[in-house]
Amino acid sequence: MTPPMISMSEVTRAYPGGVVALAGVSLEIERGELVAIAGPSGSGKSTMLNTIGTLDRPTSGTVRVDGYDVSALSDRALSALRATRVGFVFQHFHLAAKVPALDNVADGLLYSGLPRSERRRRAAAALERVGLGHRLDHEPHELSGGERQRVAIARAVAGDPPLLLADEPTGALDSVSGAGVMDLLHDLNDAGTTIVIITHDREIAAGLPREIRMRDGRVVADVTRPVTPVAAVPAGGS
Image (cartoon, rainbow, N blue to C red; front, top):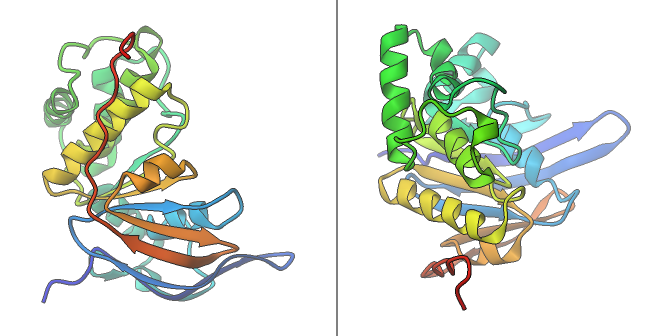
């Protein structure tokens, strides 16, 4: 039987000073799901993302990603897991300045062991996939906010990871650009990628098939619903 993409059992994350960011969280996310983890600032949702993405280790409990028990992996093995199984998208893009889109994406594959020519080929294919095949040579300052986020998404999916984690992916964008990015994430999910989106935006969370709501480090609701995403209104439209 194929294991869930993500499995968390009684996961706690405590920090010095008595701050408990996660308090006994248990949940499963199946392969192919598109999920929002929502909640106000301080609810624990970013710690949840970092724990799922193996950027942070839990204080107690078990986290499995793509069948791997991350607590049993060395730092080197965790780095390899992130490089091959998990893609990350952040609110502020984290693109290298004065570096063309093609190289920004290709550089995300530096730890893959692939030769430079193959990294660039995969980068070009990923940019084509997100609708930026005509912008390969453009540097970040020559791109709109929505285009920069698409470059960041291309970088995250260039290695074809089965899991994509997105932390407030529309937070730095206007509403039209944000809707375009969400449409792209839906398309990637339709193609088979499991996607988890961290958001405080209730409209975005309500537009996804599953919403996990957090407060004070705990899951307070887990809602599954049939959803038809609302199409973006073009600029200047009514």
